[in-house]
Image 1 (cartoon, one colour):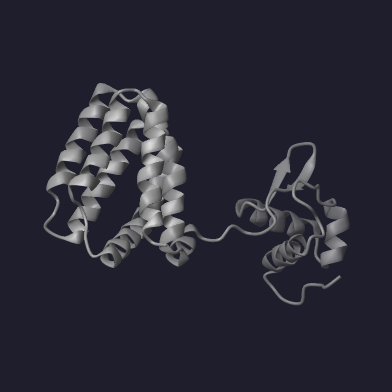
Image 2: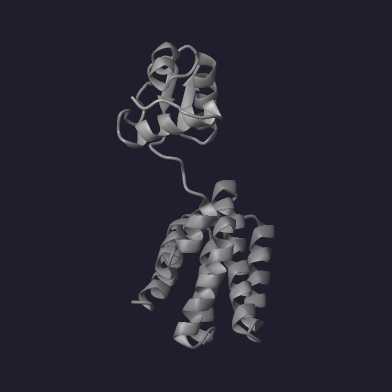
Length: 222
């Protein structure tokens, strides 16, 4: 077993444990050996092992279960979300939108309040007149789709949508530049239909309309 050569010891111990997890020594959900076993393997004291485990637990790789031990909960440190989004291509972003927004549309149709419908209609009207620039149109379009996600009353879906928004805005601007146009009567009609299905409590139609609309955007890139 490689041993630690320099400080900080807890950081080095955490790195060595993470390397062993990445190499497949322990599988997802598997229990790690106890501190008395790991400490001599790593060449550190038990308190250093405990600190290393705390570090990896904070990074989502390990979890301590009271009275049971320490278990592997991820096989690597999750990559920074912003870095993933910056690297993602337009198709990947649209596919993520399909997953988030089609479910959000269905939930919005089931859960929307009268206030939600009014907010969706206002966003729809604002989208219809946001034609001065491509950027203005994309921002108004994003606000409309966000109003539907808000109406789903699911904070996780809303957080995912908001997390996508900066990269989504960039991707949509890039895509519409490729298409050399935005808006139009047919496009607006699709958004009217989506808002109508949500207002009508038609969850199946809302999900289908959201998926169809975004799938058309994806298809336009291929």
